[in-house]
Structure formats: C-alpha cells, structure tokens
Length: 348
Image 1 (tube, helix red, strand yellow):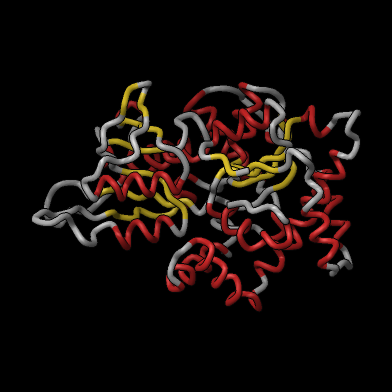
Image 2 (image 1 turned 90 degrees about the horizontal axis):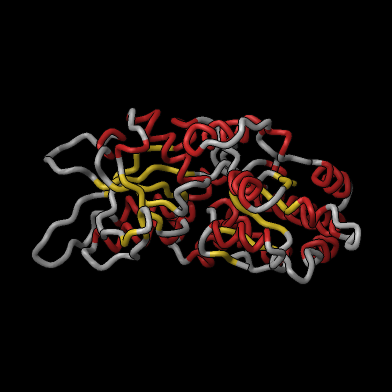
C-alpha cells in the first residue's frame, strides 16, 4: 500500500489497517508519541536527501542556506522526518531559526518535486497548507532525494514560459554533510502487533519479510548487477538511463544511500532523536527504547548458506493479509522496485 503522506502511514499502522511500515525512522517515534508504542525492526538507508532551492533575486548571486530567510520551505508533514532534518540543515547551514521562514505541507518527495516544477512554470501548484491556511504558490526550497534532486536541478531552468524568464533551482548539497548521520527508511510495527499472542505468527512474518528484503538488497548492491539495476530504475521510475546511472552511485554510498544488509545506524538514529527533541520537543529518549533487532538478527541467520530464490519469494509473500505500507522515500522506492519480483508487493 502506497501512502501519499507520512501521516496516512502512521494512522494506518496505528489503527490496524496495516501491519508493517517502511518509512523514515522518525515516523516510528512520532507514532509512538501520538498513537501508540512502536518498535523498529530493521534499518535501510540514510535518505539520500539534498536541499534544493530557488535562486534568490539578483544577478550572479551565490546561493546559500541563509537565503531561505523570510521565504517558504515545502515539506511532507511539518512535524516529522525530512521536515525536521530540513530545519536542522537551515539552522546549521544558514543560522536560521524555525520562525525565520515559512513552512507549507504538500506531501511526499515526488509531490514536492512536482510542486516546485509547477511553481517555476507559473502554473497553479499543488496547494498545501500552512498553519491551517491555504498556501501560496511561491515555494522557495525543499528537501529532495534522488532522482528528484537531479531532475529538479536539470529541469529547473529549462524552457521558461513564453515571453518570460524563470529562475534556476540550485542544489545546496547533502543533508547528511550538514546535519550529520541520519537513519532514514526503516521497518517498524506497533508493539501490540509484533507481540500479539493470538497471532503468534506475526514475528515469523516479520522475520521472513526482513530476510526477503535483505536477500534482494544483496542482489541490488552487487556490482555485477549494476546494469540490470540501472535499467530497472530507468524503466520503473520513468527516467532516462543517464539519470538512472547518476542515481546509482549515490544510492550505493553508505552513510548517504543504502546500507549493506539494511543495517541499522545507531548514530543516525541518535541524531534523529536529537533533531526531534530540538525542533518539536518530546523526550529525551534513548535510542534503544525504540529498537529491537532480535527479528533482524534471526532473519540474517536464516540467510546463512541459503541461495534459494524460491524461499525468497515465499518470504516476501508472508507479510499477511493487511500487509505492508510505505511512504515514498527514494531509497525505499528504488529498493522496492528492484526487489518487487521477489517481494511480491509492488512498493510503488
């Protein structure tokens, strides 16, 4: 199940419509704070986020984070995950406090990309809300991950409206270079679901799903399969092969893209908790309050000496009738595409 916003994912998980969620680890903490106890079962990636901004007025300007002062940042949900990471980037990179720029909620990475491009084309935009009010169509910056950050900067200055001009979109760099390590996409569940005595096979479902994911991830990250992965990215994300090729390298970069065997980044999660406490309160929390890698470790053990693709496909189908939900993050989205034949679920 694809959820257009992280809020829909959190609510669906909490009300029992879904069993397992794949999204930025901060969403597990937010769900815990507002909807019920959660447990993180597996890591995934560091988000591949880059900060993209519309160039300010002025000829030959040097774009900096400080230029977001009194301008508008667009986010998925103002109190979660990549929005909070963006606030931290603007504070560390530009010295900006949270009240020195506006925030508009428009939804997922794809929606933020489309909103920025729509605004640059002087069309109506995707709307959104800011403090309950209808948003303007003036969007100035956002966090995007690949390939959207590549597409935004490549397309941001092309083909201006007839008789007019259009500003460029500038990439100000990797969020992790400014904000620090970040545990992004992770697998998590409600504690009530994973511990349910009347459904004792829930833990088995989780273990088998993790095993399927990791085994497929190993195939995806094997350099011998690069050409096949690039082709899948191009076909399924509907991007040209050059952009897919440019996406592949950062995708395979530890600390920015995918982590081998979907390992959990403890330092990245500690930074997630630090950012959440600083910008929205809550806590203080200890990282191990939210994480139980027992099921992950069991899944890794189950893969030892196993090369049976049939086992992988069966594992992927074992998530259950309510199944898996995900919020589109690029690491997750790309891995989902690559693993789709083995995991059964069409994650995009």
